Length: 211
Image (cartoon, rainbow, N blue to C red; front, side, top):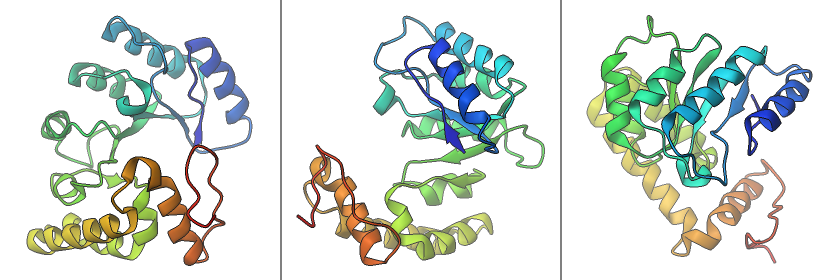
């Protein structure tokens, strides 16, 4: 997956064309960011143009906390029905909309898109409800726990999934510490470095705990 998000439709398409020439399986785009859109039709039109113009299948990364543009259920439903939209990573942390999507499309085998979730507080619930998978940030430090959680939830083992979710959140909270706003990126990078999975490079303004 290669990201092609930008601040306008034209710039996103231009970037997407350059990125797809590199041979990724999928392109990923948020809504355009920085500017708030006056209505949901702007967002629908944006994804229609991306879907009709770019050759690679597209994953919609719904992340209003970063883009400033909230997307309602009806808009998400419309986007997911577009021909070249492969799925969604939903990081809106709006469990009500997530449940509405999974209630409308309860069968993984028949729905035309993949539903992936990014809220690390409810991985157990979302998988038990039928999400295809999860996409995690800090959870990259605890893959063994998340694999067990995924298997328990997708096999319908409710109590085991609940307990593994509690374990995962405990591991996450211990890693992140009290100063979440300033420490979260450095905490993740430091943890991955200690596991010899990456170098601990944090760009300013994130705080590098190793300094």
